[in-house]
Length: 254
Ligand code: SAH
Image (tube, rainbow, N blue to C red; front, side):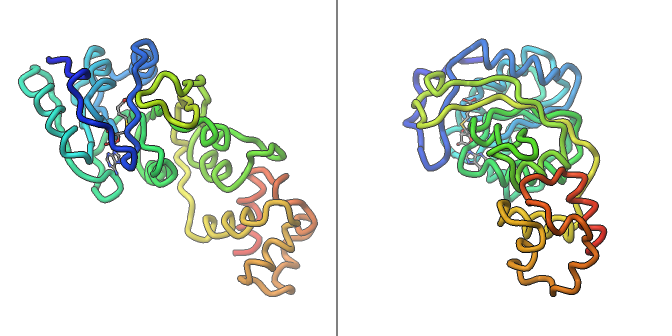
């Protein structure tokens, strides 16, 4: 295994390339993943600095997904012949069928964080340990009434038990990004949303400061008389609804 970090090519900002330089955080991420004898999927492996820490913990197999040709080369050079089962998959994570894996890891590119999370919501796995923008992590764990509570909170919390592990400050990345990050752990709940449920969540939370009735009327998807089914829910402010209440409303409207 070669250590090539000092020879890395110039980071591409538009690819979300911010490399984590803190060895302890990388090690903690690998430890929380608990990959021993498991199949691992790492998204946005970059130069393989997180992959190395995961490999130290004896996974059965690890798939490394990476889009940048220069990084793909580094990964192939670094891990070929390392004696472990490392499979480098070059391409865009959002455009490929993901390999089946027990656990998922990644310091995921900022510009596609929500797409990756929504994609993971359709996959089967035990646990994902991810580093995402801090604001994004806060929205994922926000509770009804919190300032950050919204569509992402409801959707993410229906699909996963979300745990905010710790802050990962911006100065631990190179180049230093404009915002802080956070480590999170996701455990799928097993619930997958129907298209109708997804739509209702979107209609409601596009207007989260309005009442349920006004938010749904604004969506132009319902007539006034259809909203009678909502009973007491009609007067509630959208931002106070729990995820269970949102599902109950979808049932009443469906
Ligand atoms: N794992 C490294 C790198 C994280 S930076 C670390 O911990 O430091 C994010 C990585 O995702 C970059 O290597 C970037 O090239 C890659 N990436 C960006 N967009 C991608 C996409 N659509 N599909 C797959 N990888 C992508």
